[in-house]
Image (cartoon, rainbow over all chains, first blue to last red; front, top):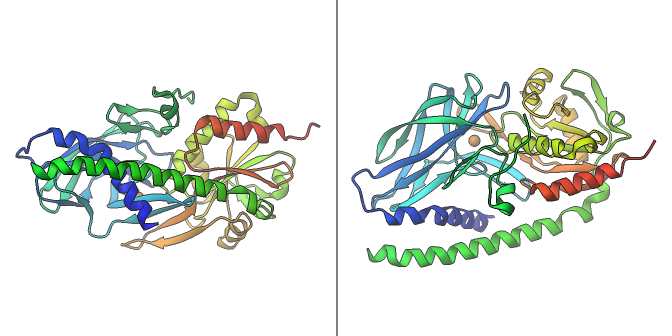
Length: 178
Length: 202
Ligand SMILES: [Cu+2]
């Protein structure tokens, strides 16, 4: 189990570490790219925010918290589906952001959990979010709300229910719902 | 930077290992899946649906059905699964009505009849929500061999660990197969079509 999550983490790391290598060491140590949330079902009390966090400095950092008006409480979570069982936990001490590396927050994995949503998140809306890092301090971002099944990769946002279609066809999905 | 130069190949190597390991995990969990447990999944229950009506195993008798256990405070696995299921239902076309679709909450404390009804209004309308007392939910979860566990979080809240698998059941209430989390469309649709074809002709 432990090995599995380590390997998964490594895989996540690899997929996004490439672009970070291409860039020189800039002044801004931490950058947050492509933050987004998914629209929530009617009456849902929780939501999640995803993004890519780049650390261009030689010092490891840590995402320790987040604040936003859209929910009562925000936590940094880890989620996984292991042996068919979904588990979600707050990451004790926050999410480590390795030196000269990136961490991707995405569905089924790390996320900023919105607990006690004041109203459902609707596709097309935006909301402000402040992320707190141990070393880099506070970083404010604007989070656009995408369709419910939206996923995101380097190519941008795919408004479809998951990665299934993309795997076989390489193209965008074709969602007929609504 | 020297450190960067060796890191890239090292990562690439790790990546291949990760892909390989993931493949093994998938194959193992897949082959471990259905056959051995087939006869033990399913059974009698008494719950209420999201319209407030009492439902039992007899309500579902006569049509194959899908059954998924989750909860509405779930931030992405449950909505993703319900969204996938909604998409498959639409793709089934006329065959879709040969099945019933059930979402059973493992969090009856928070998922009331009304909140389930509201939540499911965001998905295909043919998906029904079931809730009940804690004891009733424990009973059906036991019969369907579903794992769930309340996990307290800091500040008095809680999340639920739970099985994230869609069961496909025959019109006689007997287990047929499962659709694991994030099954691809083609495979899930083939399973659903197969179960739909098991409908007894009246
Ligand atoms: Cu979470």
